[in-house]
Length: 486
Image 1 (cartoon, helix red, strand yellow):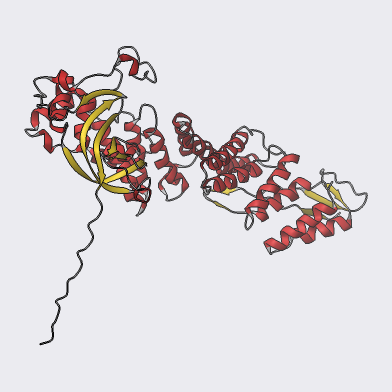
Image 2: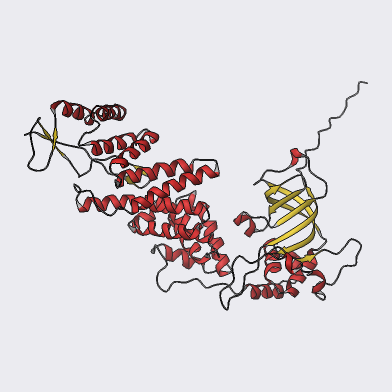
């Protein structure tokens, strides 16, 4: 009795998919009426020839065509699942679309096929990440995440696969599954689900793999972003994972990752000092070790008082610092800063446009606003812009305007004095510059603070009047002397 084996496969390892011969094998017996005592598969000589001709092809395109022909000729083949599996892996080397359609066919006959689920996740996520339409992208990511959840639910190994091989298969597949679920969640602002799955991804691979350039190291940084986008932001964990990612990333990625790490550190600690200790700790630890902590910054109101006490001229403060005081300072402290701003006309360079019409431009000016891609300034244009002059979202512009008012959490906290009115002494009469809007105009808080906690103030918005774009100066024309004939 002659026997042959059906080629199997391994699935995804890291970011590249490789079709490799696997361990699991199905014995096929030749002969019309031959039975195998070992439980092999009967196959006629004609079917065996078609099957053997297909699996021995060396060119991927030719192999795929031969396997398709075999399945069409023998739709009820006892090795249908194995053949679809081989066909799927063959397509994966040159045709993502047919890889997915073949994976769909395989899952119809073997719903728990971990290899098919892995390829579904990988190619669906890859396709979604290339989409330019937001809804299409999210739909694709959600589809990949759904297949990933099915993959994580597979706990029973195929009957013809050794335990060790099944564990290896799961070790290759699980990082892909967790990445897909985390990516889909983060894309729709579900930071909590993203954190859970990116953490699980890092825990599903050897620590050495988290220190090599590749998708796992990239997802270490994405985990930091998920902590940053949490509500409220988790700056401490953002610092840790962004620092670890940048520590092992090669250039130019290291320089691209480091700003988030340092930003979160400064937001949590309040200053740059001591960051070297974080850099040293991440070099030998995937996660923060027991006993490790970053000293938190003083309370916002204490920082405000210290800044005001140590800054003789408040007008020299950076825009970020002025906004911080307006947002977190006591009414008296906020009034001191607003008193030097109200009614003042300024020109602001390198402003990032968040939205723009012919009459209103909202923009990111402070470091915090630029980092979070939110507007902290609204410019009401003094003269409407021409349609052709309206700046694009994301453009950096230079714009001028006059400080008119500001809000915190949507509530008006300060206004400029009316034209012709004598300026009030801001420090002496804070009430004059902190006319609050009626209570009915105040937005309801997103969530009540925990018992004993103080609700964080809402975002600051500074409203400027008489806005005007400052266009680059054109070079003066060159005047050539006129030579007159004598």
